[in-house]
Every structure is written in structure tokens, then in C-alpha cells.
Image (cartoon, rainbow, N blue to C red; front, side, top):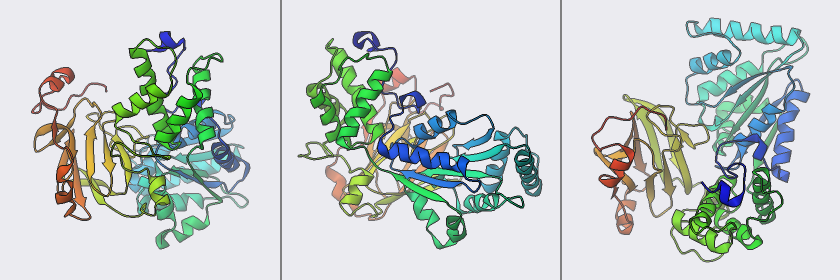
Length: 428
């Protein structure tokens, strides 16, 4: 990689949530303080929401790393689960083996554990990331857990973090009682242009820049123009720009490399100026333009005939993969960490493979890019993704959009996968 050329100790723009790289903008510092308040107050119940890639998971990891040893933590990232699976998952985090317990025994065990920890002077914290995927039944279990108390205090502190859809769920009439128990809510917004520049400089410094200005001021400002200050998009663009500079043996990045990287990623400017390449709005932009709530279609994820989750699709970018930082998490060994993405706009909904191990299949054929039509079923490993368009006539309007890029041939030779091969089971 480019570490030697740029004289860095580690990669500065990885997508993994590494606490040492956290940049505390005013927004992130306030959200972290809200999380810390769950420890100060015996009835601590905090909800943190933010757009895709806003840094919620990194913030959580940093917060947890700094907690005192008298705090007992249960952290759940897999949220596409049943109420029984949720209770089992919480108890596993607390060191139990609950898989043969009936629900009544699960609840009794958890209740006794919380009372015992309180009596021993320890605080118990439940952190649920990607909480927008929790079903109503699981949210009801959380409400019940939040009510476990002694004669003086609550015994469980709770943090729910997720995308803005979480707020919509909590505001629904069926969750009025749960919403009333929440002490604080906070929504993470995008970084400003000044914060984006400071964010880039901070990550480079942590990676070993030693005061050297690897990105020019103009380059950092151009990053904002393409990303609108969304941290995950900033990381992706900056890493690609550094690769572009590396390819020509250049140890600094300026606006030329940013433009080259954006061209390679097929991104257009978001924060202002003319757009040259078609790219759907971010959710935040769509909201500013008054179109964020327009449902363009729905994606249903199923396996073995059972629905796992259904997501409404609105203008923006949606990542699908195995790990929790994806917008749609599919916890399967056949799914890559970042498997594919959906590019959603009023004109078309496009699915793109992100160089995954097992690829995406349409009618048994591996494709790299496809404009989704109403009723299309995409296969990822053992899971099916069914797309239903809110306006099926959109299919005719999208006829001019490049589609069905075949991934057979040389691509399959590189990945070791043929269109008819069984899913690979190795690490990816």
C-alpha cells in the first residue's frame, strides 16, 4: 500500500470503527456526553441517531473503551433477531449460557443478575447499535427491561443507536410508553466544511503525519464538496485519492487527486456546484430538498422462505454486508463485510457489487451492476433480496441507465468464483 510513500504508520482512512481515530466535532462531543450521562443517572436511557456513516459506531467504541471497571456492559450489534434471541444475546454478553432456557427463565435470570450487580455497587449498561432494525416486539422487551428496579433506583442503563428510522419507530403510537422512558435524544449531523478539513488532518496526524500537510487545503475543501461532510464518505474518497497519488509516486494529495478519485468512484459534487455524474442524494440532502420521506421502493431480505427484514428505500446510498456498520446487515459467512450497495434516486434504483467474494446473482447469472426492476430477486449467498418498486412504471423511465454489467469471465477468474459455483466459505 501507500504507507511508505506517505511515511505513515497505519492507514488513516479505514472504515473500521477505531476509537483512536475518533474526531470529536461539536456534534460528536455532545453525543458522547449524552452517552456518558447514562452512567451519571440511575435512570439513564439515551437514544443517538445519525445518518449512514456519521460515526455512531466509532463513537460508541470510544465511549465504551473509556468506561470504569465497575460498569458491566452488554453490547449488541446484530439486531435482526427475535425477542427470545435478544434476551439470549444480552445474557451471553453477561457471561451466561442461556440457549436451553425458556423465556420465563431468561427473564428471571436477567432480573436476578441486575439486582445482584446493583447490590454489589456495579452499574449495568446495555448498548444496542443499529437499533433501527429492532422489531416492535424486541423494543417492547427493552421497555420491560428498562423498568427493572429496586426500591430506589433503576438497575439497567440503556443506549440505543441507529439511523433516523429509529426515531420514527420510537415516535409511533405503539411505543409511547418506551419513548416516555427515554431521558435524552440526540441526532448526529454531518460535519461542516471546517470540521471536514480538521477531520482529515486529525486522522492523518494519528496515522503518523507528524505535522506534515499531506492533503492541501484545497484538496480537503474539495473532499467536502463531494461528501457533504459524511465521515464514511470522507474516508472512502480520501483513501481513493491517496491511492491515485500513490499510482503516480506523489507523496501529497491536491485537488487533482480528489477529482480523479471522485471520477473513479462515480461521485458528483454534493455540497454545491454543478454535478457531472449521476449520483443519488444523501439522506440529509434529500431532507433539505423536501424528498427524504418519499419511499421509492422496498427491499425484502429473506432466507429459506423466511423474511429477515424489510426496508423502505429513500433517496441515498445503502450498504449491504455482514458487519454491523452496514445499513442492511446480513449475518452469514457467505456475505462479505461490505458486499454490495444500493444507489437510490427518483430515476432509478441500482445495485452494485463491491468486489465481494461470492458476488450478486440475478437469475443465476453473476452481475456487477444492475438497475432494479419491480419484482427483481437478487441472490447473495443463501439470502434473497426482493425489490418492489413503489412506482413500477419507473422501469420504463430507467431504460436509458446502463445496467446488467456481467461479472463473468475475467472477474470470476480473479475471484475464484463462477456463476454456477456454490458460495465460497472462506474469510472475506
